[in-house]
Length: 228
Image 1 (cartoon, rainbow, N blue to C red):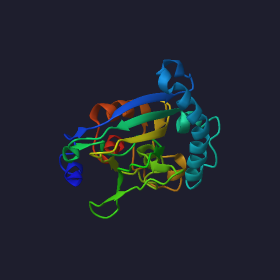
Image 2: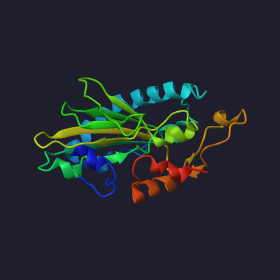
Image 3: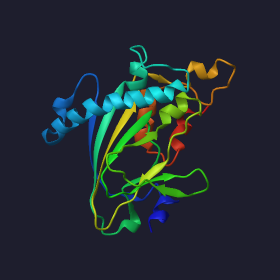
Image 4: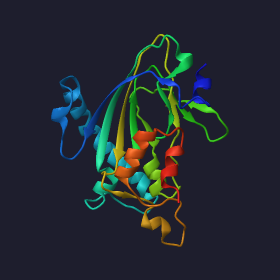
């Protein structure tokens, strides 16, 4: 069943989905996007990016970072990526996953999903997994690895996965808020000013990005790249 695919075979389990990725970078490469999705993604990002910025600012206030000004924009919102994921009905969902268990390599992720369901997050006790029931008109918000690192573990990235359905298709649209590739990622100075020891080293974001997509680490293992 679904739960066996989450466990020890997570690295080898097949993923059952199609995805189109859109890099909403400051240079605006939308002319390279498929024409079938270009207009819809451009309209969506006009609405979603300001919301993502406001949510991130609310979280950062807990770290004594009051606003994302021009000096912090490349570090905190240097790139925004929007994916369009399609999970077709799967004839044998017991041996596949829509997405293996992982944490997002972002600061935060805004997720729009249809009413099919299938998103699971790992609970804080043991190996329990909680289904995130879709709510009409609502977005799910994940904390990613970058915010855990920058907060020196005050915020925790969310381990999650996606199950597939034998009879229903599923569509999800995540928006990932990331640093620019030339940014250096590590604990905020505000976290260390009272003598607190850093949990993570400072790393060039492009090096982490290469590691994340080359290794595709399972669960929260992607954080090991930053461990001192």
